[in-house]
Image 1 (cartoon, rainbow, N blue to C red):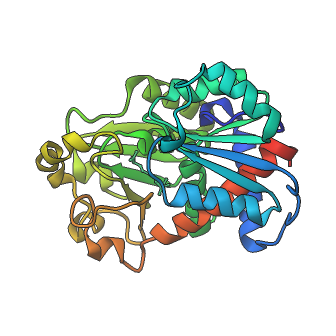
Image 2 (cartoon, protein in one colour):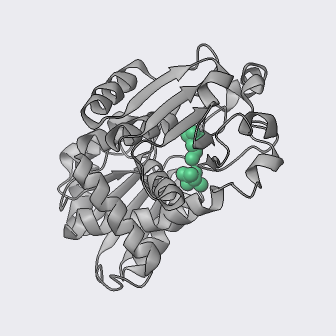
Length: 307
Ligand code: CP
Ligand code: NVA
């Protein structure tokens, strides 16, 4: 994947996703692996929205590989603000080896990628969160040994995280069902892409408003906040609609006997998930957070060096 962008998982081949997961797993087993491989290299990490996990793993991951990172937040200016997106991209490519971007607009990431000669990695947009999905596949693989045939129920808003899980699951032979209140289904264009990718990989993707049917027999019960970053104004009105879809002990018990619980974090405990589930012995939420580090290191190595 040397020199390639990661703006959406659908731009990758299944083999490339699997190679990233293998590399991530190897880095997890041996965190010192490839230490120094990115000596002298630099990542530019741009954030229009808050972040804990993505920012810290983006910086720490680069440091562990011997490189450095420059983090840029909105108080320092917006890409496309003082000068054109194309000009910003053509400046950055002269100085850095990879550009990570967390933005509202997916188009801004795509546009930057189009004008930049160095790889651009999507660190979350309103539409997608591919780095999260890669870390999540690593987590599911760690828990169940394989991905094909595993079923994941994403309970909540058909949002960026749901979208990337649909695509990631479709590429790796999983069954992914988004279980959501009416009106909060996944984006139809993303759903169409997920369906056509799923067909090629023996996977199954879909959505339902029926909580019990959607969660029944799932190996993974996954949830995320009801109101994503940028939707704060809608948070209160959403609470009532989403409350019946809260992942509490009773809902978790509808899944398969050995089901695990996952959440990309940050969690709003007491809303989309109860403490009993978030802190359950089968909750993997902090493994997911750890795996963000292994996943971003694998992405850096693959896109910068072609490993
Ligand atoms: N899961 C995730 O992307 O976390 P941050 O928003 O803290 O980066
Ligand atoms: N859907 C959430 C994910 C945060 C990591 C958001 O976009 O705010």
